[in-house]
Length: 228
Image 1: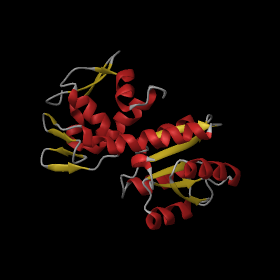
Image 2: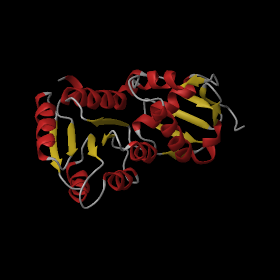
Image 3: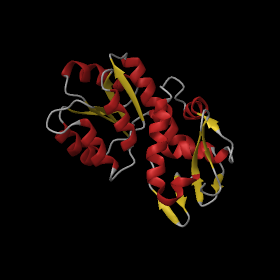
Image 4: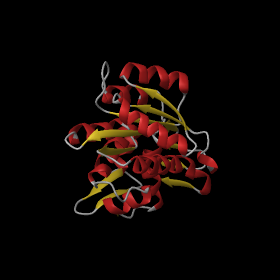
């Protein structure tokens, strides 16, 4: 399965029936999977299994999904695809602010989950096709090296945050709508409020350089050479 073969997916889901189906579909596509039914076990396997992506249910025994995401994101940029119930919108947005890369709501099609997993992994590995380093003011984004800097300081970003920052930097000060940003990220099917959550978290990660991301009322966001 091209570059996706042998990619390791950690399925964190306490409902055995759902986990069985997800693992079966993922393995059929060439992925290697491990399963955790509790938040505690998820953290253990994250350290031991070293997954390329984590499929994380929010409602977990022992340690909740949000706390699992918070712990992992504090130490790793591994992509996280959250699984939520439709009624958990607030938790979903909090999860995105914590650094999750995407989300999917229950009930879902297993094929849709596999497609989302592939999309996130493509975004992570897609930087090799971009041969430019983008600089706007004190911010630099290197998609080849998959890194960002605020002045001389490296900034740890999740794959989605890096792609979002690169999209803003490529626009060179032009305002991008939320729909345009979702399109750049390959997330045209996601609620536009997802962008707001990603931007909020991105500003926080960028520290003093976060002020360069300006909200353009009625439009979206742009990256300025200097903070407003």
